[in-house]
Length: 223
Image 1 (cartoon, rainbow, N blue to C red):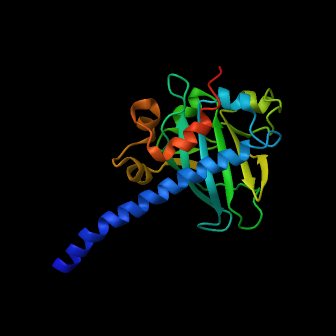
Image 2: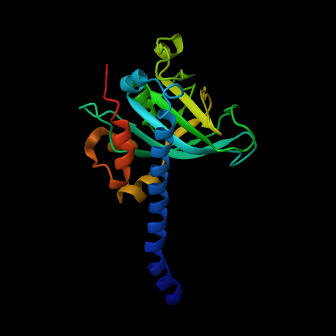
Image 3: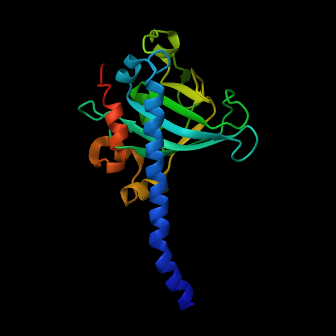
């Protein structure tokens, strides 16, 4: 019994470090995803939509068929505007369920969502948010100079895009659920925090989020 207890004490720090590194790597992947999408002006997300958005969700490498055929599962992050217009520390999220309908085979897919209205942001920061049921979601327009003044862009609480095998397009993610990943938050911040606490500006962003926030803060708030 003592041997098992001693082994547990010795391995627990290593396991925590490994879990934390996975979250840090995922933050790097989120930054790389956003950078890759925005580096091509005619294929990226319209700048004015980013500047008007309240929150952003980035899910790198969402996987198809993780549980059953047709299901999706991925982990990513949400960050929201602070009072000064800059982006907050990131909170971890899990996206699962729904039928995305845009994937080729079992390819991993990068997903980006912009939350355009305060009502949508409030719901997204709850215990679980179902796209299309708890808030209207629509495929976002593509291209820096694309017209954002469409009915979908004006009326939707959330706009969404995907990138699969280099192909970037707006998609509707109806039926998928977004919920906080409290375990990943604990790994990243060293204590249990919900996403609302994190994005309200009460938490100092971790060093691992510096690249992502630097990229996002190139798009200042514009209302």
